[in-house]
Image (cartoon, rainbow, N blue to C red):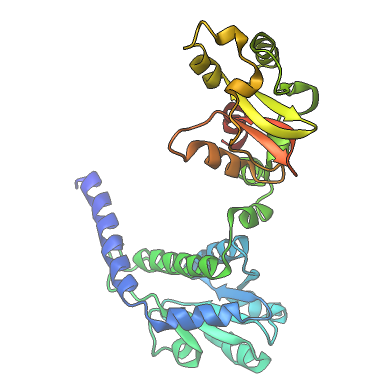
Amino acid sequence: MDIKEFAREVFDIEIEELKKVRDKISSEMERTAKLIMECKGKVVITGIGKSGIVGKKIAATLASTGTLTVFMNSAEGLHGDLGMVGSEDVVIAISNSGNSDEVVSIIPSIKKIGAKLIAMTGNKHSKLGVEADEILDIGVEKEACPMNIAPTSSTTATMVMGDALAGVLIKLRNFKPENFAIYHPGGSLGRRLLMKVRDVMHSGEDLAIVDEKTCIDQILLIMTKKKLGAVCVVEEGISVGLITEGDIRRALQNKEEFFSYKAHDIMISTFVSIESHKMAVDALDLMENRKSQISVLPVIDNNKLVGMVRIHDLLNSVN
């Protein structure tokens, strides 16, 4: 047996089955998404065995992207966990066959409670399919298992259908990175998404500040001492200009006049800035995604300079 070739064959089978499931997506997805968006309670995902394991993942994805979601093992539901289901909830029951005993056995209680029932099943005519308010068809023609028995293509299809539903809801909720960060405060991802400009900017005594009449030699001394790569020009507390190392180099092209220059002669009066409450990732995007990249960014609140952020600081903090 060519092991590498067989492993690739498993991929090919699952990819082909996914395409077939994708092509079956229709208005049921729209109605399911509407049910969840209009839900005044929570989403309860239930399943057993491999379907239950995939259900836990789907529940985690939905919960982390703005949909109040919990997972309930169908077998545990038979022994009291149905108490977590309310009349304003939406239950997503997962069963490829649609006839799993544990899943089918809790349907009457779900109906009596008054919750809406969505089926993720490969059999629309199953006991689950017949009772469901909406069906997301996850039916596959072939498992990737050599015996065509072990759940492989079917569990993959279930997981991707869950991802598709989560993606639709993210769009409908206009869920943003800062919203995502609220549910992921730990680790590098949380730090990257939660960090704001004020958390990484240089401020106070670290700032390089001059007025419009400051001579070029003094500007050079201040720029060298503060090591921020730029000097801010401030008049009566208001930021009126910016001088970067690039501006200094351009001014040096006029060697005869260079040492007669003052700040107002070489400063940029229209410069890019950001507010301190903005996200650090937004500052990085502002500096990088432009025709001409910039390496320093003044932080301006109410026309007043409160800080300076360098691209080096942002790269170290958000990556």
